Image (cartoon, rainbow, N blue to C red; front, side):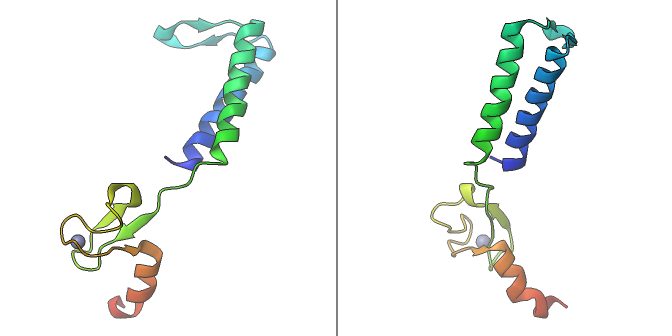
Amino acid sequence: MNKKIVLLSGFSALFLGVLLLCGIDINLGKAGKVTSSFNNIFIFMFIGFLCIYISRFVKNDIYKKCPKCKKSFANSELDKGMCPKCDVETEDIEEYYKKNKFKES
Ligand SMILES: [Zn+2]
């Protein structure tokens, strides 16, 4: 999961909550219309604050790179940090580029 996405959904929900609070009805197309009622305002505000709160605990996925096949993986895809193809330990992508900076240029 990505921290930015959670934070962004939180702010969007909060923004919709503020619109409802101002008495603006939100048209969601096929899903219908959200009217400016106390319940709807409460729900959107609640979801908004909840997402912003949760985002504090969300860790961005770490990306790793295999030194052998040079493929990049998200840490969550890997089993104990080993490359699924070569069975070699993967390196942190930033570390990898720091190490290989001189070789490539
Ligand atoms: Zn590999």
